[in-house]
Image 1 (cartoon, rainbow, N blue to C red):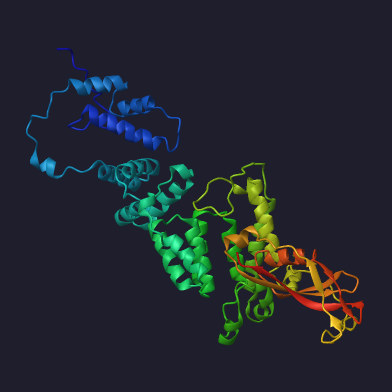
Image 2 (image 1 turned 90 degrees about the horizontal axis):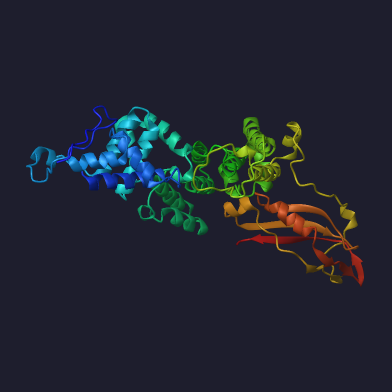
Length: 455
């Protein structure tokens, strides 16, 4: 019989007592799958070498030869106590991960949790969260989760599709029906299943706004920012929340519409504190800083304004991020009353209205009057943030349809945020019409025109 090849007497970890060639091959394949999450090009041979060295061998061939040289233990009686306490591989990996997490070695912990995820389909991020929190408390989980969210998307722990219910989609469906109470319950369920789902945090905040639960909405957006600190829509929504008065009387609450902040300036001026405006201005300035603060060009056309998972890196260097930030800052200015903008020395924060003297108009009740005929009107398109916010409603504009065929004195009767009022005004300026006439002569007439946003 050939000479046995001894193992390294001081390995990084000892071989299992009943190590077999089949066990080693399975372990190498599991490790390969986990490592390819970080490096898709890694080879099986490299993983086999890593496994061999951890067991104290200089090569995979040496490890295999040693295992083959060991006596066959299948026929030997097993210790019933060891058999009773044998654990499945996924549970071993979970416990190894917990041990590493307790020591602060989060890289090793995540590697083991991935291994457990590979072995056990029901092993999800929320289950890891429960295990870590139960064992070590919230502080360790907070630090571990901060490390997890710093990893590339493909390296993060995520649940299997079959582990996730339809709670998120059910929440969106409830929003479409205007049932915001049900929507909130569904989004919270979605977050219990998958705590890092950014869109669930975001739409939870949006639904809470519709329920006038402003403090809870703010908490939802702030929780999102813990996961994705440079998330533009969340910062934008927090800024809008600061323009939502908290101390309205019951009568005014019945009139106030959080989606029509343009029309609620008068109410806000009565009930908003200076601090509310200061906080809102701070968000505007942050958005502006994102649009201007660049240390280089990172041409990443895959940038998402509204991601579903946390991102890493300095997004302020991304030209797409900066462009979106500039747009949101521009839309936000329309929500700030002009006197507040002047106080803070901001750019013109309201739509500019042309003034036309009332005596230049005629009485539109005259029986001899032929009304304005509009023969060209474009469709007002959604802005990206309005599409994300699933905003619906009407923008109603008032304008002077002048006898010379021009428009003047555009005024907002009912507006919508997120740039939709701007879009409607831009379309109105391109309207073509035949002026009203009185006894056959063209005359100037004031009238309203509506733009529907219901898609």
